[in-house]
Length: 403
Ligand SMILES: Cc1ncc(COP(=O)(O)O)c(C=O)c1O
Image (cartoon, rainbow, N blue to C red):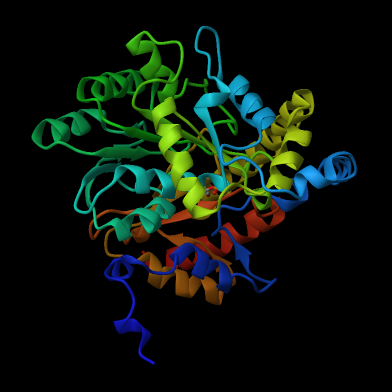
């Protein structure tokens, strides 16, 4: 049976995620992996999760084993709404939809907003998981350049003045893959552009709770609402959040915060996709997270550990990488990005690094257009300190042999 001739046309844009394929290569225990976006498993709050599971199963067992509403558990939506509110800006539980990870939110947003050949603006490079999800819609991606302060918003304005775009997608805070953050000034400008053009904007924000240095900046969701003079999310920003990096990714609990008409439409897609996110993991997540003092303390602990790992990686890079190579210096999140001289290809370097039992993700998959081959992404949250030092040292040897 030749299945290839039978698959739908949209599958020609589908391919396995490079990151997930590389993760398979790193399954050997001796490999020091800077490849995945994995949180540190030794920091998962296992005891709390165990207690919460026991509590929900013994106290609400039949309810958690039952079908539940597509919008998600009301108490969990309320808690997320409260944590997103600040000052006059108040998010209501009706503005929240619980999703199976924020990845599902991205996929559903594409399904409610995008038609074939629509123009979509993204920062370049961008999150590869969004590209995997959105490419089958056969879209035209426009690339907005980035620098150390995130997306160059002046270039976005020029782009939008030249051609109407349907949606923009961005990770403004501790971006995946670069770790860079959109500055406060640029957020203000971006909000103005969004309001002027009434451009639907997906703010993908898995990382903002993980800040290790510098001053925190409000979300685009909030900037845009302030500019419109609204105290609730009723504008063009669809904000995607997740418990994957602050609790555990295995629970698969994410959310969208947006204007009610968007939530209403997404609920219709949710009903078609999986009816609702797992009742059990929503209840467990709520049971853990409703103790906000615990949750905040846990996040503070993560920040301390990841800050040390980031600092150690940056310091070791400084010591061992050749001077022809440059890299980003993130204030938070899980990643930094390395740029090698233009003649080097990160996929080739990866082969040599894997021979030394070190892994990373080549950057080209994150880029729109045929560029980024000389870049790669490093994760610093997952490897223990001694592994960070040894892995970066080995990578330095490989790089020095190539530049
Ligand atoms: C920018 C970005 N968006 C979305 C996701 C998906 O996260 P989740 O586990 O919530 O589906 C990730 C995961 O690494 C990410 O980096």
